[in-house]
Image: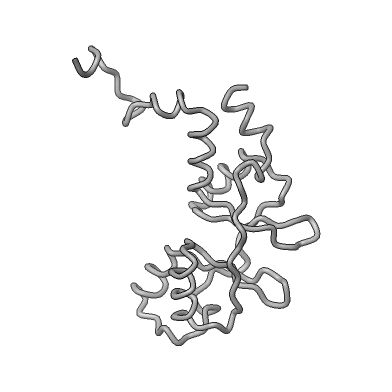
Length: 155
């Protein structure tokens, strides 16, 4: 199957949905950042009564905490992205790529149709999927797609 066909046919679970690390909206920014470091994750989901309230990412640490001078004892709900875009568990890989591209996202929460959180899909997993399924295509791309070589490189 070609790249386009696979992106349309494969579901989001083909990417390997990671379990979501969840925090309460009242946890402090400092506690959440420490948890992200300890768990080695690029984002956490903010959950209240089993309902997805928001997402907080490593990008938010830079733009909404450090650059904005937020205090680490403030609740995470003051700097999270509320009501984040989500994908349903039956979304395709093409849906993931489209939403990441259009929204500039690196992490997207995935939910079941009943609203339960299934996990998070990351741009890293999309890249790994592409390399695993299409190594010849990916490894043979020039650094600049518009680049045309007049002669073969190397010896």
